[in-house]
Amino acid sequence: MIREFKEQDIEIVMKIWLETNILAHSFIESNYWIGNFDTVKKMLPNALVYVYESNKTIWGFIGLVDNYIAGVFVLQQFQSNGIGKKLLDFIKIKSNELSLDVYKKNKRAVDFYLREEFVINKDQIDKDTGEIELSMSWRK
Image 1 (cartoon, rainbow, N blue to C red):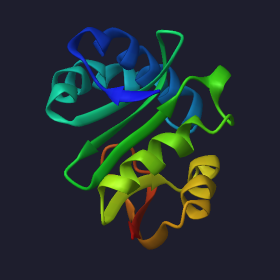
Image 2: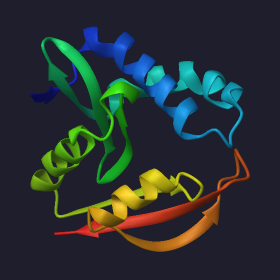
Image 3: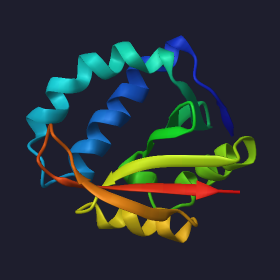
């Protein structure tokens, strides 16, 4: 089931955010994610966040700021089970267009967004990490 984020979800959502980022971005020092943890935790309630929940346990979430997807995060043990797609499809129903940035080296995520009909608009260097990011968009 997909539902809106509640304040009491913050700890598990942030745990998923940290673990997923460290695992998906082995090319970036884990200290980068750890160092940004508190900032993201403070900003999260200002975003539109939906969680995927099963058996009263959150397995993943998607965060939006306007039409910008700040991220799709699914616990490692539940990845490749369609949860990310369900979260993305849920947002697509509510939106006419979406955009996001994804690290080029995160091939699994890039492939996922390409399968989901996102197109690459440009690449750029992320000033915080020095890594190449792809700017992608989707339109209904």
